[in-house]
Image (cartoon, rainbow, N blue to C red; front, side, top):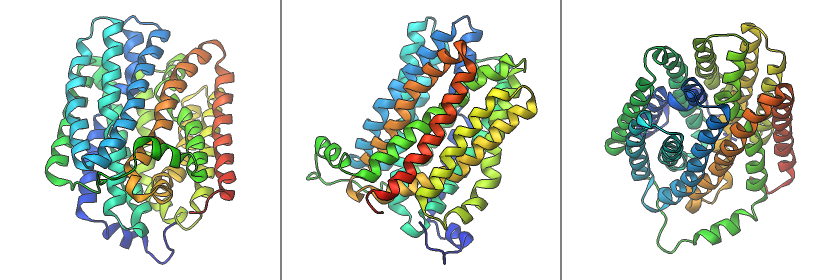
Length: 393
């Protein structure tokens, strides 16, 4: 955790200029994160079944799975900057092709490529922040980056809901354009960050080391469970909203509410939570994420849906700024990019499991699925508390 004697605003002002370029790029890129949240609705509105939509989301998840490993390796070998540039430029290309897909097979291939190219940059960004920001300011830096991300998220889905009324293709091209802009910012404004020497340990050695790191393993398991919950916002929750009889733009606004709450609350709240042990804070946040989704069982009105988002988002705000900073602390510095990539596997695996399982279980037994989500979040919180007996930070 960051020392108590560091004033939060002082910590924010102390961040290097390169960190602020990361925040700007994150904001712009997230403004254009328009396609994935609406992919289920896009496919079902174009004549595909829920099972088809689940398959497409699985394809995206498989791409994400490979991206986390490739991105972590590239971040350590060719540098954080080059990894981000490659990711953004190739994503822009893949996104431009996606609206022209004519068959389900083409859609599956392109969503796989989009997941692959669009997620390679994540380990590099998290590792670069750890590289350029002193340890006493890292939680602040990760919170600021998430604020930028969610400021874009607050704007993007609401805009997407309106654009989709006129042309679904607009979503894909806007997504491509923002990726391209972030790539240009990275190319001209970001440093390379740390790179491993040629004598660093091979992949199998890093995996072996990671599997002896108790703190990392329990953290990864907890994050896998809560990541399954997160993936419901872009899949089953969209169906819940429309099944309750609400229009598409209501779902867009609910997603934007999530981002808006993070923008308004996360930085001030982080000034409080950073005083406590990271694992306890993460445990509380993960548990609230699960409880928030469980409330979807009773959400019959707009007010009920808002309650789901508010409770879920409160958990997100509490836990997520701590996560990347905690991971940077427990990961060996020379393998930081690859540890970030390995940790990213939890999100990729959740993307494979969560939407597919969620859409199918929701179609059969919706209330049971929301109960399972609640259990995932609470169990994730419990695992973080168990971690208190593991390897010390």
